[in-house]
Length: 128
Image 1 (cartoon, one colour):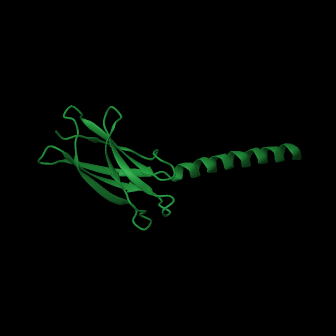
Image 2 (tube, rainbow, N blue to C red; image 1 turned 30 degrees about the vertical axis):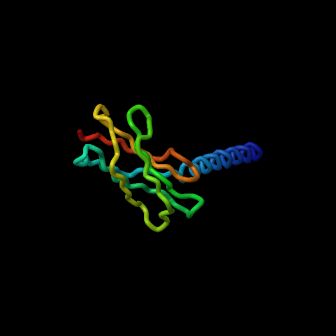
């Protein structure tokens, strides 16, 4: 019985290690917490996006957010030029975004320099 107990304990350790590893891979992705869209007088749009990410410095930080149309095409991108280690979450905006009049929604996703895309995204209704 002692041998079976040790085998079960080793299996449990492996399962826990696999779960912790999976969790650490997911923990580093940039999340879009909220986004707001406004139509500008010229017919283009202004979007403000709030991102949360555990920026660690220049080697691992949220480096952009993107606006994706219903067909999956990136139609705008806001590049984030530096880490925001001590400013979390943070909000940045972009103006002059062209959205087709037939598009009723867009999706906002964030990107980080180590993991790429994969965090929480937000879908916005387009006010026409």
